[in-house]
Image 1 (cartoon, rainbow, N blue to C red):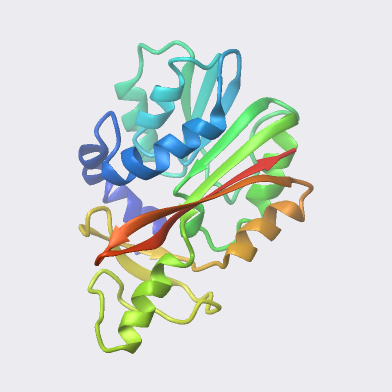
Image 2 (image 1 turned 135 degrees about the horizontal axis):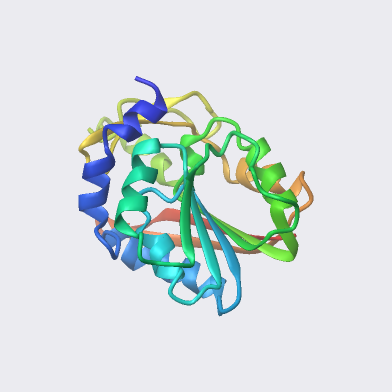
Length: 235
């Protein structure tokens, strides 16, 4: 089963789990940091790349001038169009982040990529296209699983304690595709390990400047471990 098929089978699970406000991970760790980086979105045109069930796109559309949500899953896009037909400044379209974007140059004030790029093998074209479609001084906000997070569990594996969520784990520099039980451990998904440097250099090499880096921790087994990496790039 390829990545698109994996996500298409998870549409209802994701939609039910996220609802209209997001799950605990999003509400407590991801959303507050992204909203802090977004600042005032009045009169801004925003692209939510990898919008999933669309709930976060709908949230930011409450203040933004216009929001476009894109996703590679036709089933997610169909769901979004059914759910949000009455929001006039919000639209959705099918688009894979590994493809060229069907937008003109210098269109968006902000691009958001929330918990998407860890599932993409090569993010170079996304970085290139994001730079092209952003306005000058525009921001690209990227949120991913912190690359150090799985290394906590890899260390436990070396000590003889395996985490059943991860089918296989390797060292920090092994970029081989792996699988994990995700979405509240209900769906097996393929992910592509990257280092912090991989994420940063992919965008810097296309012309972006790294404006802000946020490393968000989560308490596990009575210790605070890295959970979410959020990068704010400036064109």
